[in-house]
Length: 245
Image 1: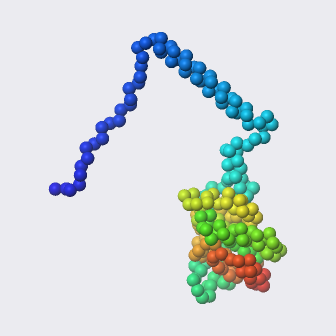
Image 2: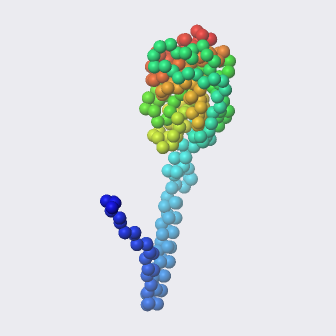
Image 3: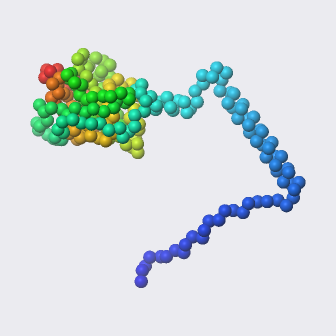
């Protein structure tokens, strides 16, 4: 005999009976009162709308929200699941220690869509390129993005070297979404590839965030690293990149 308690089924939920009045005079009063209430409510709404200012330039909260999220990085919204297409062999995952087996190997070329809605290829063809992979929900990425942007603003990125970003591991259920609004809020100036299916991250052998890959002008990997980098460490990566190119 089962020990589970069997509960009786719930009675069906029935709609409450509609109220009615047998007094016609009372019914007429209710109708008149209802019409008057509607008129008063309409006047109140008109007054609230008119109080927004005579010049018509006052933005509503909805307008502000749309300005903050739509058109981030000067772009239309690009869907989170927009795929990227790698070409070439995937790099092996970056080991925790020891030599990087990917150094000297061709970097897979990834084509896709930038956050500006335009086609974007990573790395830049024929130019030394630093590629930075970020996830919007990663606290280390959130800390690193302003550091890198300040480094760029201070002239850390030499002329002739490109910095390109890959936004990957996008998940609307996780914090700091959407990534476009986050990067726009940081005044991010690097082109950003949308990696909606994580194929660009897999092709790079990504193991942790943030993730950096330095690629020379011939398209070969000079070095990879993960974690937050200080400006001197960014300088060292660029020095290795320019020396190899």
